[in-house]
Image (cartoon, one colour):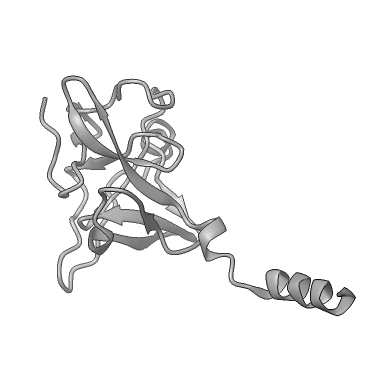
Length: 147
């Protein structure tokens, strides 16, 4: 029995921590906005129209690169492969590099949080113009959420 417990402890210690370290993307909804994607903690995520959407051979590009922009619109990062839950489309999830961070993408768009959002309350950052572009929530299909 002692051998089995030791073997189990070693197996757990050496197993990849992808599920623990990975950002989860799932779906939430609110009145007026309908369904949109959020992180596993329920924080809404946004795309930025000034970014470059990654498609085919083109890597996603991040235009919100200043400290001022990133303070208001922090990037959604991960240390493992992002995970899709519920109605999200796993084939639309990906990552792109920004400095030494892995940024989560959905439908090729780098994802951001909005500093003024709090938990699962109605997202406050949808359809805002700032920093040279528009900010939108994304539907599970990858389309923008227009109010």
